[in-house]
Image (tube, rainbow, N blue to C red; front, side, top):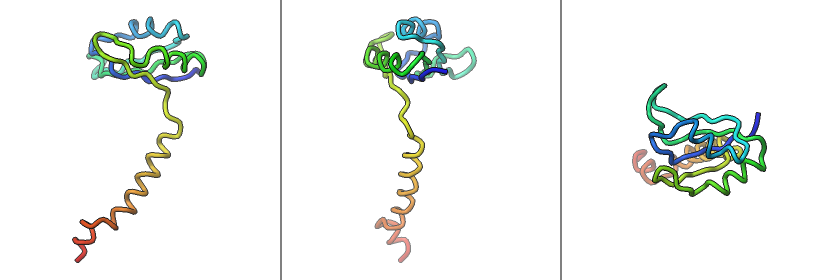
Length: 108
């Protein structure tokens, strides 16, 4: 399959074709713009698939912070193990809640 890139900060009039043209120099293979409905406006984000990791990193360096339709794009690779970090923090947060002053007061 290829490497995924996440794109944020897109305008409501962004199309798959427009984004594909922007990422084509970096080996874009597929583009999926997030939409509110099947034919609705763009919700501001998209996913682009490029050939390999080197192309993905080059696209991120070149296009992150670039202006498109009057908005600044956010272009990045997905964070590795992001879900694991979230779950670990969430579990730690649950343990810490029992020691908060508000919880201690409620028990007395």
